[in-house]
Amino acid sequence: MRRFATAVQRPEPALELDVAALLLGEWDYGTIDLPHYRAVLDGMADSARRVRDDQADRTFAGARAITQVLFTDLGFRGNTDDYYDPRNSFLHEVIDRRVGIPITLCILYMETARRIGETVTGVGFPGHFLVRAHDGDRAVVIDPYNGGSVLSRGDLDELIKRVNGPDATLEAAVLAPVSKQQILTRMLVNLAGIYGKRGDLFRSLEVLERLYLLDAANDRIGRELDNLRKRVDALN
Image 1 (cartoon, rainbow, N blue to C red):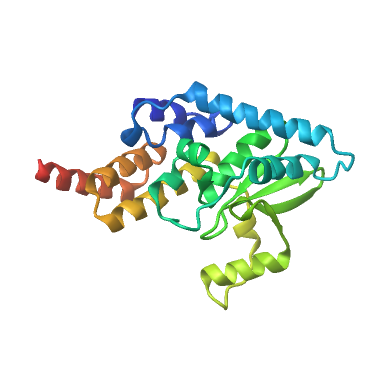
Image 2 (image 1 turned 90 degrees about the vertical axis):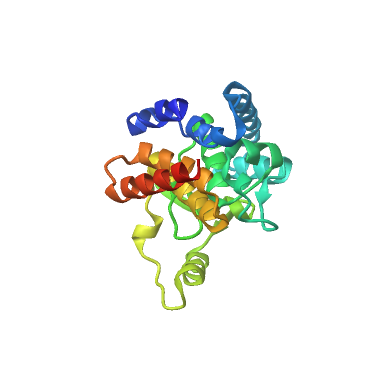
């Protein structure tokens, strides 16, 4: 908990997303080997940099290189077989197993991009996290869960209707960039839903403890945390 608090309780520019995401699940895995996993991410970035720099077409060369390395060369993919497996939400498991859910694969994409100087931001699309890659004054929306495919306006319209119902319309707000703290919060909320459905009070408590570290001013989280602590204490 102290390691996670140290990682996330800092100003947004100083928050290291890869470190915080790797530390997120230490309650289950013990001490995560940060130097090892960061070195793996560095290696992925080195490969993407070489591919980018070899391309004659410079249009979104960085994004195309990252997509090739992650999803073609290394075989990362969305876990369509067991989407709600908690391991899909832990970055080190995603790196080891090469499967994940939209938000963890987006973090992988973003952290590879950051290491090679490409501008890629997280997009908190409802129900399906995405990234936006920038090339000067142009930008494209990319779906790492589906092999790094580039999404058109029509694709996004279809996706928002699939998530929010046939009457949903695509608003600019759903494509706005989100902060690193918001990304971590969404990861934890995903886990809270998984553990809540399983009735796993102890892991639910671990999730709420970390959500509270991210947003201690949130009275609702504080109340839920207090109630859950009492329930867990009653079991002991």
